[in-house]
Amino acid sequence: MKKKKILIVEDEIKLLYIFKKSFEQKGYMVRTAETAEDALEILKHEEFKVMFLDLGLPGMDGLNLCREIRKDQPEAHIFAVTGLVSDYEFSTCLNASFDGYFRKPTNLKLLYQTAEEVFHPENVTNPRLSCARHLAL
Image 1 (cartoon, rainbow, N blue to C red):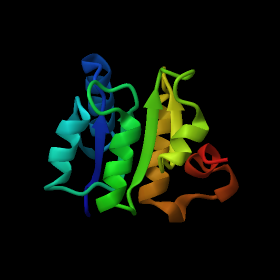
Image 2 (cartoon, rainbow, N blue to C red):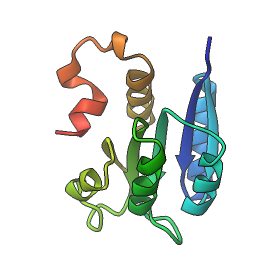
Image 3 (cartoon, rainbow, N blue to C red):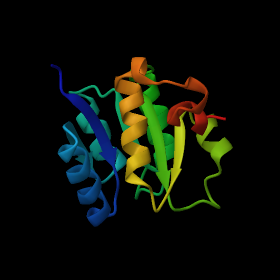
Image 4 (cartoon, rainbow, N blue to C red):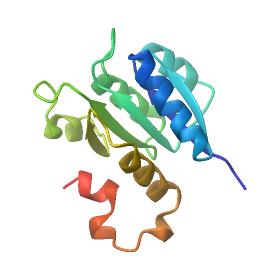
């Protein structure tokens, strides 16, 4: 069985560790980056079906990172994660080609459910209520 591989880009080290360990406990292979530039370097050598990007990164922000990723991986499922709600409205994220938007503090169960729906769309019993589709409304 192919391992479910995700990329998490987050500059808050403690939060990055929590996300990484939590997803690994659920059976995911997790790569992490603390900056957009580090993420782009990883993406030169690897592809990911699911990515969670912090928006308030140092240097290149998550919006521009998403735009860069879309150039080479248009089929990836990319989700914004931010605590900067006033600066990054949902419509701004959609315009940057994110598939969804999560506010910090983030419910890890919702992140898992969203990733699972991407990896196993056949298990989504009600597509109108699925996490990924609901976030895009």
